[in-house]
Length: 637
Ligand SMILES: Cc1cc2nc3c(=O)[nH]c(=O)nc-3n(C[C@H](O)[C@H](O)[C@H](O)COP(=O)(O)OP(=O)(O)OC[C@H]3O[C@@H](n4cnc5c(N)ncnc54)[C@H](O)[C@@H]3O)c2cc1C
Image (tube, rainbow, N blue to C red; front, side):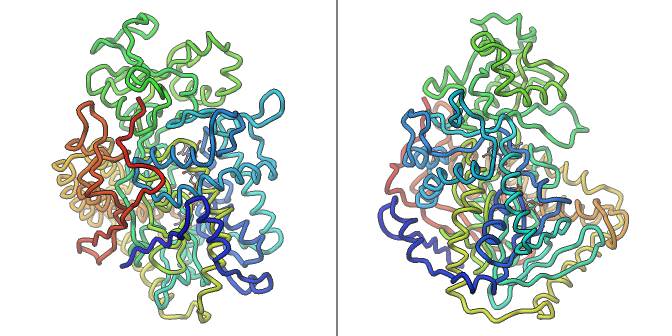
């Protein structure tokens, strides 16, 4: 397997412009001869499908929800970054690029990140033109707030519902193309196989989730925009349906999986409240603009927060990272919360929580102003915890939130399978070992609106393909594999629910491959996961049939894939003998407990090649070079 990144030559600020000129074009009259399959209708998928439709390609778009409007992107709260420098506070394309490379702990490709920063400014214009109601200042200009890992305000937002508003924009553009007949939408269709013909991605096999029918769709290229895999931890801030199936099946067909161990644990989520719980809720990072994080200085202090005097509180982020304070990046803020709790200074039941306190901000700005900025988030918190965050500090704790790893893609967003492109959270491309807040929406929309429309044309124009039909043996074989797997799941007839296996896997992953990892723990997980997987295939109980709507069957298929992915994540974490970003190996830390990279040995992307069931996957390496940002120990002090 070759990992050729296809990064264009030339100075970093000219690469994308020159590449756009150098790439081949498909002339307008020829675009209608091509059929592109887009799997996913979140921000990445909807923006790609709408734009490709607008350009004149025939597009089929698939999602498992009943409407594209329900993609997980709708949950995004806090905002989207762009280097507009509206605040005149020193921002620039280069600074966004720099912050992102540094934020990712120098484990991302410079060229990709620079392009992301460059197109960020266009995204805002595009969304404003679509009518996205970004917050505005008194004078009518778009407002900005700050997110972690930046000392400028570059985050555009629509209250705490930025994802929803952006998705409505992309969805409207998509619906327009659906209305024009340029995009055909297939909701409630789950992709279960990628079809590769003569080494190229030529189609997918889906299950109609309402009728159970297994159907094939051929095309000239396939785009996977299927989101992240953080639900491998079971408890996570993701929508419950988010899963790894699409990218996992593509991995098993030859797409390299890059940096699977890079997962993001977000510092500000509502703490777990019991074993019955099936999901966690994020409290947006934007709250750290005004909320202050603290724990009692004394261990085991159970006094209510209002009885703990100011000088007995430890505002630990402000103390440890005075330059960035409460807006330290997520990996660092999460680890600091864990350290405080491990130290016996956590608050709330079980001591697994820290305070996020608005008292000072309310005193300074007034309740009304805080409600205007964060009202819906604070209301959500109150509904879930029955505590009023205007009166008592919120309690928060880190939780699984995002995956920086994903399918390996080159500069053109193409995987190691020619024709298979991967966009948004599903790829590994831009965030290195830690994603900065408000950069996921930016990346998904950059990929969909501004990158793939160029690179797909280049691929199609430079590739000679003969038409394929669904009676091709590769389609028949893929359909047979899907049917066999469905029958296998239904045939086990065991006693345990898929969810109970998922919960058990999540506990293993959280304990051994979560916020902190070590060799022994990872080796233990690598024993436990295959054993659990074996138990799954002997003991899972899937009720109902495959011939109609069957959510237990859907869930079982996804859990089966998580049970394989979890093992790859641990393997990747074990091999990476350094700490970087969200990947914190306890053996590799500085004296003051910060991540200690090993640039000599690990300044690379690790991309895994599937070698067959029961065989050890093959680890490939794409070296990372830094010519515009100097490698340094990351510091937010
Ligand atoms: C609570 C929360 C808040 C967040 N807030 C922010 C924020 O403020 N700013 C920010 O930048 N980021 C934020 N993020 C991260 C961001 O929302 C996501 O990374 C981003 O929306 C992912 O978009 P996507 O298009 O890649 O995938 P998704 O939105 O997850 O969409 C995936 C799509 O793929 C489809 N799909 C998946 N598998 C299949 C399959 N097998 N067959 C058919 N269809 C399939 C789904 O139906 C869906 O349409 C937040 C995340 C969470 C969890």
